[in-house]
Image 1 (cartoon, rainbow, N blue to C red):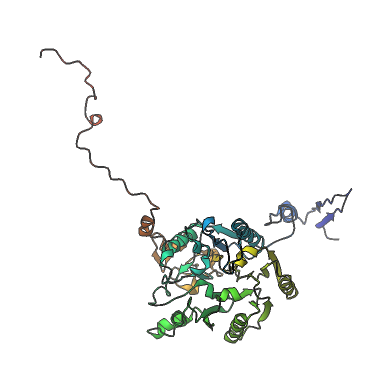
Image 2 (image 1 turned 180 degrees about the vertical axis):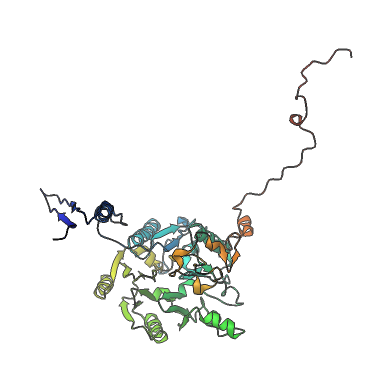
Length: 434
């Protein structure tokens, strides 16, 4: 019998109410010192875990670097009828959208969801069209065709910075003249980025830019190919790529059982042949949501509760389906992915430690040296100090009237009495007749 032994006792139900008590009895002899006994007691009794209470032994891993940003449009801008004439309950629409993000917070797909300020137009609901983020790389979409959302794009970036986003911004798509792209045509996978093109949303010019096909030099083409963009050609009338296909788990593609979903899945399997993909086909019209959550695999998938067969398929395939009420947004053709912008607030920093002159995306993600970096090392990029925030320019804040106009105080033309001998009023009355 060892000198140091630990006995864990579990008491069952008593008098109709279940009472769980965890009693720790550690007989400590000369071989088990008090500090070790205290650490062992904290391990069993006082270890705080997330989402499960302080005294729970069940550990639910959280991913604090994957968040979601969304906007709710003004209620008066939401259409009251679908294109087919079906009536839409706007109040129920708002409740279902808010409930969707509540369910999303309960899953392990994200850690937090952030609601941004509403814009005075209906299109602000579709936040996923403006940005695409792959790990710590943020790619803003071109403003061609969405010039009226320019202020919204700038404001979204400032929201992301305010909430702690440390991603690096690549303006490669905004530099292409005539390029069109939508964030809904991008899918993050563990082996690269799937990019749908060939529609009015995302044209071939943007695809050739990200794949390095029109790069002026071989060095520039090599930088573009480092993004690992795998193009998926789509039909001109096809919905966004993220509406027909989603990445889940470790090597699973959830697709819509339609012509567009089959086309996207077939090309994705051909483009990334090294992965033995698992394809899950959901019913046509069923809305679903899943994404690459981070470095750990997440098997949660949010699914429309009005399609029980699809939820059954997800469960049989090893996924964890979350039912979501989605009747009103479905009438307007709104999918879960289109209103939900994934923002990965990466672990580590923009410099990522190791060496002071490590720059670029090769060293900008979390690595084994990140524990040794200083707290303020993200202020140094390439050995040079970064001043301010490159994504929140002062000019944009002034144009959006977010900063008050400066007050100019003119120099007084008189000498204040407090700066010379005497007071404002004379102490002695003037002499009469002087």
